[in-house]
Image (cartoon, rainbow, N blue to C red; front, top):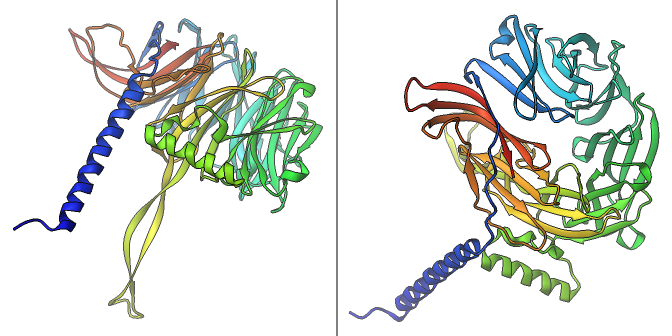
Length: 517
């Protein structure tokens, strides 16, 4: 029996597809192999606290003087009275001071914010309208507590910032934005009628210590036109400036301004860095910059040199070809990118901003039969429900702009395609004195990292293990790992580790480890 012509053709096609897959994989491996490999970080100072994750909880916060504040508490403190412990460490991870304070039952730490002289710890209570604020002296650790009352029991607090001894809060009241002013000397917390919108409209809530102002950036749209509102308040909560940025007339029906971030500095030199979409407030087409006078500049993702490097060799080439064809036809190619912007970072050439591209991930819940009126017999009709599974992150981009909002260079970092339950930044970013941008994140007992430079294609596969106190020791397990940007090109890794020395018994510790890139 001879094989039919049809079966032979299918076999030939499968062979071609197989070879195509092999060649593509080899090209991708060569692409990654040919990239520059940055030097691993120097792991200098290390601190270990005897502790375990079943009984203890530790929160790590960076202070304005580059000191480290650790808030330590017992995990069962919700059910009884326990002290919470505040410890400040120096850049060398040496203890500066330690203080203990009563942790009352049903009190839960919400936020920590800090000024040069004072740190603020805000606790929730069993009463949904009552909050407890601790003011901590950064020099000594001495603290005083005060109780405060929210204007509504329906407010869900999201962020906290402090300026000149005053505390400002960003919250939601049934999906509506609420901005609040907490004066530590007053019991009542004031609602600021300065900003209106929904949760997804807020692009920025920050304190500018240079101009001594609280700043909000909110995206607005009436369905036809979009604009971005920037509002600035003094430490008393009084409005000192309101600015509206909107597309030029010829762009109003196409470019929709979305969330934006504000640069630090005085009013005249401030720049907005944000995203814009093509007739949509959901998907992003690129980045825009604008001064507060409204001079808007647009930078499509397709024009960034490194935006598509997260794809395979073939995928990157095909994507660029698609954009070129659509541009030749005079029609935009609209893709379903969503971009989560980080706060703006000062840069030797101006400003740097990092964004993470993500999309909502759904899963199929299976088949759900319909039942008849008696509930006894399933109908033959079936329906499949899609359930939200989290947010999947594909890659991060970093862009550097001069102080006039002109794009100088860009680069990108392919991520591990992980899915997260909450929409929040997954990488930490820092700018070195030379102007390089380092992105890091913890995953599976390792720290992944990439240092971005202009006009350089660097490996996405670099990772390093957190070193132990002695090379002869062995790491058995770790959990609750994290890493935060510390200062300059220094990051601080932390978490719980179970360690077995060459001689003696194993120990469980909460560690802090400096990593200098």
